[in-house]
Length: 376
Ligand code: PLP
Image 1: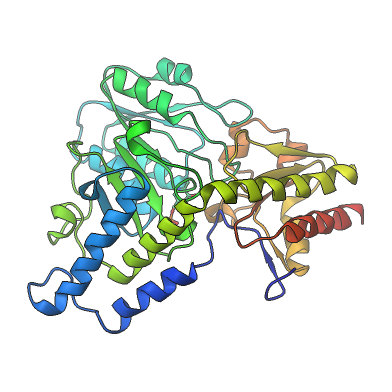
Image 2: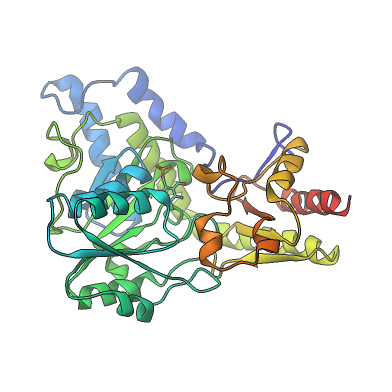
């Protein structure tokens, strides 16, 4: 059933705000608006709220509360992890990342490269997967940081983070993962993974926009990136966005509690969506492997993906052609290039990303609409 006359299937770009998160935020916007850093009693409630939110978020990823640093979102967390590790000019040591990272990582790497840091890019296979042995080929004992995303934002492929992290540590390098597409969608245990840093963004897991966090394992040598006041244990300056932080904690906790059930539902929706396409004998490829639940990057042979997106839009169906930040550019994305998709398919790629807000019926409706458009 369509809600508000649209089927929203671009949840990898952003998600709907959880209504409990919204309710929890209101008191900190309306009544308890004090600056959490002040010493007077009016700051007590926001200060307590920050403490509780930090504890809830830490529990969701098996971290310590003091290892959670609030930021303005995934982009800032990624920039901090890269630039905070290399904030001294011409510092020794290099960075290894992958060719399919989000631009928040790629552009931050280009920045430190201009400061004299050597950056190496490891490749991926046709499914967007990289391996510990691929990392072995590019890493050296001079490598200071390895940054590999947990799950790709376009094709959904989940990387073998634990093994990649072990390889980085074997060479004395730190390991960061951009887990923006994964946190709140798959179980994340930072201790089990062994990562030193992990980026997350609230609006990808039904929290508010403009807020996120960087997990930094205790003792990790990293500089502060946002300089100014002594908020966030002196590591990230700026008056805390208490309401957004509270909303992020509520949304993450709720998402984490329902991950298992949600995964089953999303896999069911994926299956139905693909079955409708198969039954209509549509020539398509699903990109990626071991994808984040609900992510369907589909490439239709000989189709203009951009035109397909607009036709679907006219029918009230919201999908994406690739990464949200790339959708203004009509070129083939760096991710599709990296997986060597034939141009007959890559031009016709759309990303459907389903969430708990979607229904089985909607997923079938999306496919039926695609079939209708392609058969015309
Ligand atoms: N990293 C990945 C993998 C993403 O998908 C995104 C957003 O699309 C970001 C980073 C940036 O996150 P934010 O929108 O919170 O800045």
